[in-house]
Length: 462
Image (cartoon, rainbow, N blue to C red; front, side, top):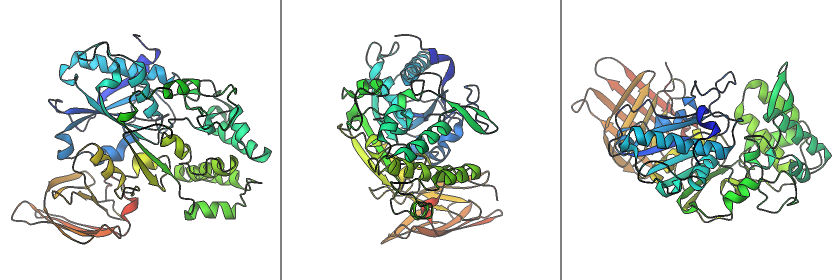
């Protein structure tokens, strides 16, 4: 197939942080999830690209070790207008165009995709052949080295369904709550801030996220079974190239248990869950809303999907029932954490972004300090001493000396070697540390971090 209706509403661009030619490096393509190109005002226009979606990951990967091996490209698309299959074909077309204009791009590459972006990547790989370059006439998946999916609904998300969602509902009270949640998530038009209608279950991109019923939990004759996804998953295709990161909220998380206890939530009754949802909506607390959604999926669907990230059940993001390259479990992560909580630990003992770097075969920054008040940031590798420091608009990179004693890691750089002094200590067991960065020309920066698990990769003005 040639053109796609989505061609006019997609863009493949090189990330602005790396203006150098690709040379002999490997392209790494980032693909956002549904509504990932939306602006703060809710508009979704391909003329205005939302780089902030992968802000923290882009910040973390902005280092010399990574850039020596990879060049990042971002694929953007408009949501709720075209099917995933049409978006996947548009990705193929954008790649062909880039191959024609820049023959050095005509090579194998990597993809990292969050949420529905992973389905876009899989559609591109399995349902399309290239029309240009060395892979002309061959299926696109042949050129992919690895596809790393983050919280991707490989089996769909039952909350997107209609008939099947109602069939899964614990009782009538929970059925009404799930229907209300669907109205707000898939809202199409609003009146005074209240949704008055919603995107139908059979419209893009909601239809792409419907449950595929791989677990046989609903009537297979239901009209809202995701037949496109059933077909995509019916062949192993390139599953051996997939590394699936999946998360789920901890059942004993304090916020979750308080929500259930204080809200009088049970299988029999949703209690005050709807009021809690409105409270988090008013506060603009996206993670709070995911806690509410997690409980709704759990209690509202008879504990069938007990473990979920607020949107996607664990068995879907882990792509259960298929043989993959690897799975990485990230307990305590919600759906958004899987793209932005880079300092949180996954079950493999590594921080999320550290683990991703290892999958990309790049020596990672495995020590991460961020000042609790000013946002000043220091990242470094305990293996090489390479570091990145930033505060506001100031960014410094270099290489210091690392010493290790148990879980304590120390980074030092003296004034004889450069124009700065650095002393940093981090206890990776207790996940806390301190650092001092002194510029000989002027300023001294101090970093105090008592909880490195909640760090972000952004440098705030101070």
